[in-house]
Structures are given as C-alpha cells and as structure tokens.
Image (cartoon, one colour):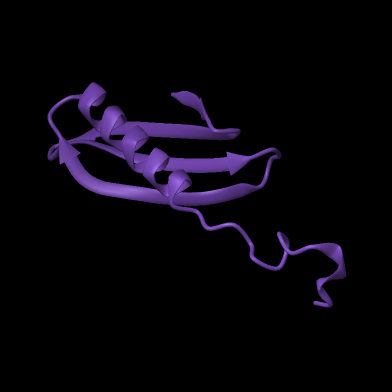
Length: 79
C-alpha cells in the first residue's frame, strides 16, 4: 500500500502469520533512495489495523525529522 504525506512516499508491506498481521514501512523523499525503513514486529488481528498503525508510525517519524541546521544557515554565516 502506497501513501503520500508531506512530500514523502510511504510504502507499507503487510503479511500474515500465526501471530496476526505484521508490517514493514519504507519512507522516501523525492527520489529512489530509501529515507527510512522499519519493521513493526507487533501482530494485529487484521490487515487493515496493521496498515493503519504502520501509517501512523510513518507519519510520526516524518513529523519528528529535524532539519539540518547547517543547511538552513544563511550563505554568509561562515560555516
């Protein structure tokens, strides 16, 4: 399942097991390089619940990314 959020692409892969459904999340931004990847080992009773949880985790990760302080400095800052 693929989603867009704040110029990021979120790809969620879900699979079933005896413990329920688990997910893996890949977050990328403007390009083919993977920005973040994480496996959620928590089992969920349905595929929809697993995907909803994974999407919320991905959104929180995107929202918590800190900007690069050196990149945001004025050009004449001498860094």
